Image (cartoon, rainbow, N blue to C red):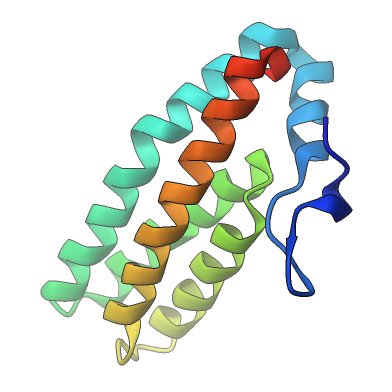
Length: 127
């Protein structure tokens, strides 16, 4: 797999392939493939849940949805998605929803990149 330091944008670490390697060591190709499939299915749902809660001005529900997205992103090494989710989670925890529409838009864009990265890793036999 590519070294984590090779996958950067500016100085920001975007993906951590070592996370995929750890999952593969723990449970083999089967577990890693299942984890990727689960993420690809659940992440859009979590993001939509955050958007729905935002539309209803339900900060606690936004926080919960972004917390879940943050955790699953971290597990698979989607570091930028993890950071964006953590930022939104923290902000929602304070009760402020200002600017979270833009953050969910950024998460949508990042999800497209993460999906491509994970599918490539899976299809190249890395998962």
